[in-house]
Length: 181
Length: 87
Image 1 (cartoon, rainbow over the protein chains, first blue to last red):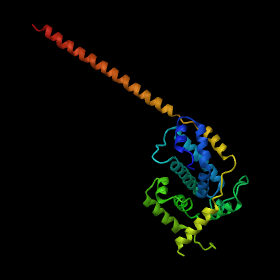
Image 2: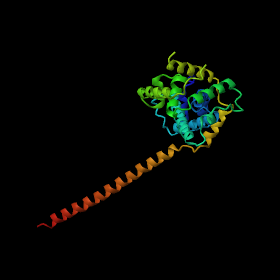
Image 3: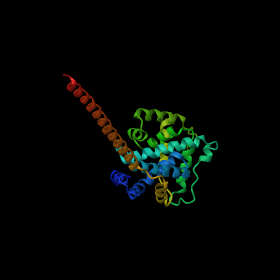
Image 4: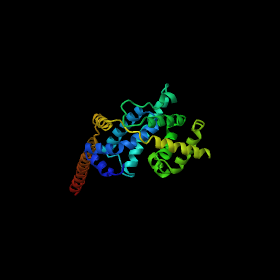
């Protein structure tokens, strides 16, 4: 994700170059899609949410609301995570939202993703179903995406202590491991 | 194995197993269509509004300054008239 100079591309976008934003999308979509689908557990919701997050990011860059205090990569993770948390909250408010109904269904057109990966996503989604969107985001960033506590804190815009506390609560709220072989 | 280690082991396994998940073909194009369709940011509009505010403030300052100057001139003339009238 960091092979290209995202800061330079971000400056180009701010100057009005929309094609530079296409390059940002091109170089970041794989990792950000994985994060979003792990956060939401559903490919269709993940695609809509990631698209919304990219539109927000584009508008923020054009309006020069990206202050450069963090790296572009960390900032993009923040935009995507916050958009996914909002989407998760809205979904919890829907009356039909049950863990089974939210389970990952491999979309027809996803030829590049293996069936085992979708099955694993379904397992992850069912296991994390009890967590609030905030707890799920901490657990996914820290223990699935592999970010350090300080990186997770930077993405979530909170202190490292808050990350550790949320992580403890998330672990306590996880479903029992009885079905693990 | 402690519960935390069991959880970590399962999370690691699921992280590896979901590493192959990828966005659908054409997702980049879909995003760019959404970007172009979204209301275009108008940073220049904000700057124009700010410029308008500065212009209005400057105009008001000039007006106030002229009025004050006129009042001062009138007062000075009155004082001078008074002095001339004094024998």
